[in-house]
Image (cartoon, rainbow, N blue to C red):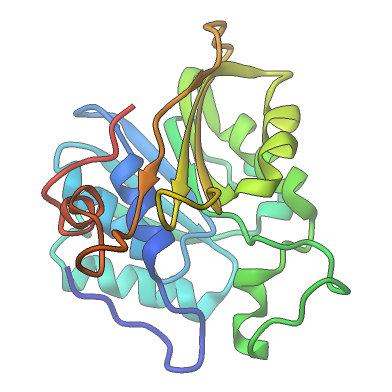
Length: 232
């Protein structure tokens, strides 16, 4: 997959790759990604799921244009489309039918006093103007009953994610993402089903690095190279 990105903007990285690997859309299903940026996760998920349809939503017009161009660059524009839209405005503002699945990597911070983004051009990717609640609310409206919601976020916001999704979603499955086997997880990927009622399941963590060996653990390396999925 080839990806054109803004030289001074947010750069797609590990989180986008893991989110794409966690997408388990079935053939024919429609998937939406709010805050798709230039399409890093969106296009990787579309590459992994060649029989599913993908819709990106991005408020930054330059990033949205790059995402659409990247879809064409990778020969995916027949299955991937991108529209300009703001998560804060809500899903209904897009006038789209509900989707089978939603996947997203919300900005990790919502308090401007707590963090200064590395550069002004990256602030939109780091700072959620409407808070995390705007993103969970969008996801709940965007997906049909029985559809899936997949979110990657900071591990210390897990309680907030569950609280905000729980009124209308359940059957939670949580995958911690730890940098090493002997340290706490810094990320979580949460998968929920709208109107789901099954008990919460805490899955084994994905350990990214092996202190004794190479850059990534064998499991992480296989996922990042597209040789394995992040199974649920």
